[in-house]
Each structure stands twice: as C-alpha cells, then as structure tokens.
Image (tube, rainbow, N blue to C red):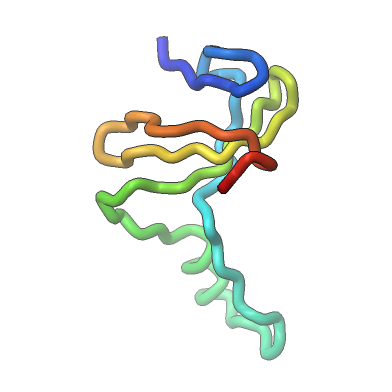
Length: 88
C-alpha cells in the first residue's frame, strides 16, 4: 500500500490525499490575456525533469492540512513532507 506521512496524523494511505500540483507555479499577468492555446499549455503541459519536485498535497480525507512534499519523479520516492506553514 502506498502511503504519505502527514505531520499531524502520521503515516496514512495515499488515497486520503489529493494532489494539488507542482510548485512554484508562475502565472502570467492577466493583461494582456493569453490566447486559449497558451492557457492550455500553461495548465496541462509539464516539464518532465528528473530533478526533485516540490508539490502541494492536501490531506482531504484526514485533518485537512496542506502539505509541501518533495518527491523524486523518477521513482516516486518522497524525500520530505512539511506542513504548508512550516516551509523554510
């Protein structure tokens, strides 16, 4: 069973968490507005870099805490988990 360790609740099944996206995420200024194809690329296309990723996860079926997760995308290994307010 795949798990993630919540700083409040401890080790929990991954199904209790919702992926919130990678971070940091740069959004362009709204003026001038982006054309639809540029918005689609910004929202749906991701860099497939082998470097460690910083991700948002939400413990939605648990304590409701937002987490900053550092994960290795090559093997899915979680390197670090911090509560959103505890980031360095």
